[in-house]
Structure formats: structure tokens, C-alpha cells
Image (cartoon, rainbow, N blue to C red; front, side):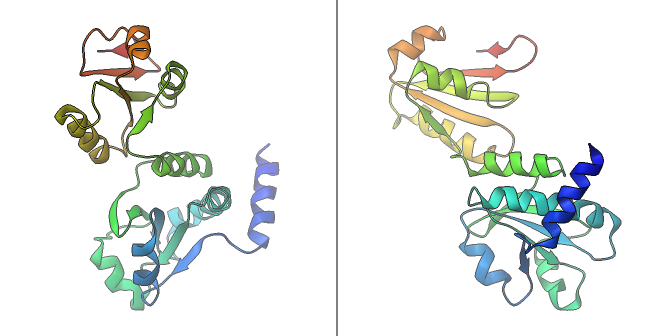
Length: 208
């Protein structure tokens, strides 16, 4: 199985790469314009970078189908060191998620599967609006921890605060919201709003 996987990687590497090559000249014209992009800061001599390279290539190809770009920059090259310094790069490889120039640390696994799953999650809205019982059921099982808020009005202060929390912690959890849905409230035991339910794939499965 490992031999087949390695062969597939080599076949992919034989063709044009889907990883965007960045440098000091094009970094500021590409990265700030993207709604979402993953950037690897690497050094050619770094063993961990070499280990990550084939996984990163496979993820780039998979994510290209979803319209999610990933890129890399040789942060150790003299001409690129200012860019690396700007983002506080002290070790290799360092991966950062950029949204219109704003960035956070990558927090997923460093495998093709892990990178793909993490970035697909990043492409979702910070807060997903759920309109039916089935949507709530499906969404509640999309990750190990999912928080869903039940509100009467999406313009309420509580709903806005929940949205702000979702934006802040979107790298850590999935967030959903149900607005003025009596059927969903009854299905999930919501007796009053606002209520936030924490769905889990472990332990007691659900906390209010």
C-alpha cells in the first residue's frame, strides 16, 4: 500500500505543480488578494520540509479542485528573508493561513489528508446558517466538536456575539446557527433561546 502511495506521489510530481511559488517580488501581489490561501515558509535544506513536500503537493492538487490555493516561499533565500521576518518565521517549515492579508497559524496535521481537510474547513463560513432539522443533524457530526446556537433573531446581540466568537475560534471548532426554528428547537430539546449546544463525537455526545 505504501509503495502504491509513493508511486502516485511521484507521478503527480512528474507533472506541473499546483503549489504556487512565492518570492519577495510577487508575495504582496498574490497573498493579500486571496480570500483564503495556505502558505508554507520553508528552507531547501530542512529535513522536515523535504518530508512535507510530497504531502503538500498532493494536498495542493486536491485543493485546486475546490478552488483553494496553497503556496510556498523559500524563507531562507536572502532575497525573501524580509518577508519571513515580517511574519515572525523562526523555524521550518512554518505554515500560515491567510485571509485577505490577515493570517493565523496552521493548526492541522501535516499530511496530505490533514491539510486538505483543514483547508476545506477553513473555506466554510465561520458561522453556517442551518435551516432544517436534517441540516442540523448533518452539520453536528462534521467534526469532533461542533457548536450550534439557537436564536430567535439573527440580529440580536446574542447572535452577533456568537458570530464574533465563531470568527475568532474558526480554526478550532465548527459553528452553526439556527434562527427562529420551532421544529429544530423541539427536536434538539431547546426550551428557550438563546441556547448553545456543544455536539461531540465522544463522551456524552452533547452538552447544553
